[in-house]
Image (cartoon, rainbow, N blue to C red; front, side, top):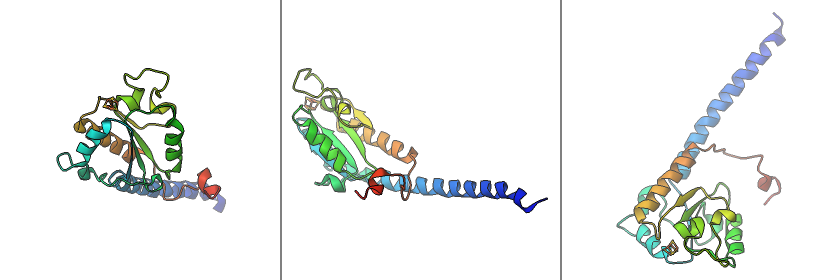
Length: 178
Ligand code: SF4
């Protein structure tokens, strides 16, 4: 048997080993990221009152590792859009989303953020998914804190199931030095 006949088998084993290692890394990063979410609360309306309740001791979002709000989107990986978004606010929300570093996730908090709610008029954005990608929609006007925590757990499951890489070399943002 020629020496070169063994090369494809070796290459396959190397891919398998790399794939196995990548899966372990992805699982570990997913676990770390889902349990250390740094939120940026974009609060515009009455849902903010329930947000305060969510953050306080009774419901204690700290149990899920997401208790620390950041006041710069550059330091956050979870955007909570809390309340009604009108058309004048739309470019501001998009700018905030763009400033967040990858990987990042978005929760639409309440029916106004999810679909415009009962503000079916010319001035209101009929759901923030017309502006930015949304990972979890939380219904309710306002949603109960338990609903938001349920949405947060859904997001945690989604994060755990995603593929995570230590360095994403294909990222156009990294390639362009941004
Ligand atoms: S969903 Fe209800 S409580 Fe929340 S911002 Fe809209 S109107 Fe206010």
